[in-house]
Amino acid sequence: MIPEPLDFKELHTYSVHDRHSKVTVADFALPPRAGMTVRELVRSLPGQLAGRDFPELVARIATAHENGRPIIVGMGAHVIKVGLNPVLISLMEQGLISAIALNGAGIIHDAEIAMVGRTSEEVADVLGAGAFGAARETGEVLNGAICRGAEKNIGLGEAVGEVLLEQGFPFNDRSIVAQARKMDIPVTVHVAVGTDIIHIHPGADGAAIGQTSHHDFRVFCSLVSGLEGGAYLNLGSAVLLPEVFLKALTVVRNLGYAVNDITTANFDFIRHYRPTANVVQRPTMQGGRGFNFTGQHELLIPLLAAALLDALAENSKAAK
Image (cartoon, rainbow, N blue to C red; front, side):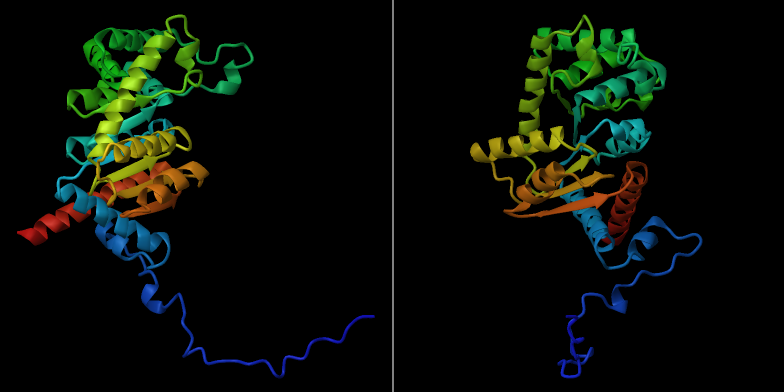
């Protein structure tokens, strides 16, 4: 039988005036207007979710920089592929990036930009013929740099930066690795063997790759050991660099370094498990704060850079 509809006449109610509400008009965004500055735009964001978190992250990074604390960037290669090298190089030039960690794909796309001003082949067009990743110059330059780095007992990032500068490639000014080497900003490269196209080339030397990348992991641990009061930004690495960061953090804490009050943030166009757990949540359980922002790199990272520069300029003006 079909039951009788429930009667709601005796339902207990309360006044909306007495109820706690999570959203109020005080949290609403201000309408945009023509000619707004970046600072005004950030201040106009709604006081909800990312509209609340983004200004706090900007303020935390600005404070870290003003206090002389490091700001370390971990990057996936997609950040390079969407054209953001000039934004990051500008932040490096202004002393706002203390160090950069890359995966193996990062040096490939960055080096190809330096060499020929373009990168990122269409995989579907060449995979069937077995030609994917077979660009001769990419393999020769990078594998040669790695082997030389092993001979000199230096890290992979430093070795690649040296070779790019020595070769004087026409687009070195657009290369993060070349410009970082020029500015003495550490670049560490963390490689998973078999994931990168240069590993299929005849010049690849597994021992040299392992030696130079492990050297860079130890350098990265040294950088993380001084991260107290600083910030770590994970830009577009879904797996490798979040794992590397977590291992580095446990190493330095195991060795007695106090790295608890830190700001971390993950920027990516998909919210993945490892960056959320290993960058945003776990490292800040003892202090500091982690942030997660989901969106296109080509929009969010320039916005972050512009907002940070505006915040620092405003703070400097207020201090005078």
